[in-house]
Structure formats: structure tokens, C-alpha cells
Image (cartoon, rainbow, N blue to C red):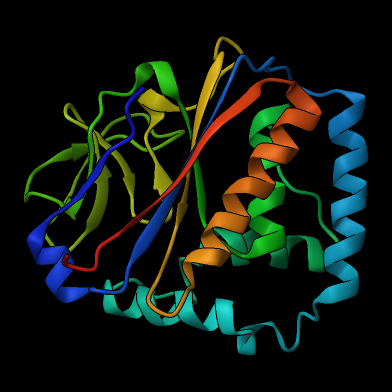
Length: 231
């Protein structure tokens, strides 16, 4: 797959310091659960509980950056939390992360550890090149677990391919391109925000690919940063 992502000019002008990082891992074995994911969960849970405090989490610079970005997107981050923060809060409150599959659970662990929102897609269901743009009024989107599509409005930032919206940036992924037990090849997207360094994004995606390989095998092949900054 040739990796290419375009930024709509409206997005580039409004958010000139936005980046995404994309990584690919091929030949994974998706299953509900295995010993490797159980061990990884235990290890990462212990790591984040030692590092973060629920009372001061809102002051963390990464949490702050995504919350500020959400307000600019007309999303209330106290009601719809950035996914990395939401996962981290769940574990800091003593709860478990959802059990979906070894691959999805692995990228959720990476998102929680780095506090960076992440999408995981079935690569073979995608139609690149990709684009970050504002939604078109009336455009349909069916998020994971939804029974029917809802209608997007033009204030919503989205990641799309040539056929459909893949994600409402950066918090809800499409039902049609999600990872299932039939998935063999995975594309990971780490979503930036103003104030998030590209090094953070790259570290997040590389951590994700490492976790997936650990629990589902596969071979990582590409990690690439795409910046909205006009050339």
C-alpha cells in the first residue's frame, strides 16, 4: 500500500500545526484473547497506575492539548473525553479496559499509555489515499456498534478515504473498516492535536505496533508522519 494523506486547505489554514502518524502491520493473527495480551494488560496497568494520578490528570500537558483541541472542534471534552484519556481514567478508577480482541486491546493499551487517540483499521477494507477534511453536511457515518448511520455536519473534522469517512477525528471509528477476527493486515493512525510533538505521535504508533506484534505476531512495515503545515 502506498501511504499518502492529503490535508484539505480549510483544515491546514485553521490548524497549521496538526499531524497524524500512520503505521502498518501485516500478517497478524486476531483472536479474542491469549496469554500474551493478558500479561501485557497487567504490565501496562501497573505502569500507568504508578505514573499517573486521577486527581491531577487534567493538568497533564497531553491531556490539556487534546481537551483544548476538542473545544475548538465544538466537542465538550468533559462529556466526550479524548479516547486516550478516557481509557486511562477507566484504569485509574480500578476498572478493566473493554475486551474486544488481542489486536484492538493492544492498541487501546498503547493509547492509554501514551494518552494519544488511536484508530485501528482493517487495511484491506481501505481505499487510499486518505484525507483529513471537514465533513460535508448530510454525509452519513456509521460508527462502531451503531445500528444505523447518523448525519455529519460541516463542523466535524474527519479522516476519510476515497469511498467513505473512516473516523470522526479523533474519537469515533467506522463500523465498516473495524478490525475483526478475519482481519490479517492492520493500519494504525495516531491522531495529533496542536501542541503535540510529532515525536510523541511516532512513539505512540511505534509502541502500538510493538504491542500488536507481541500479542498477534505480524510484521510492521511503515511508520510515517503527515503534517498539515503548508509547504
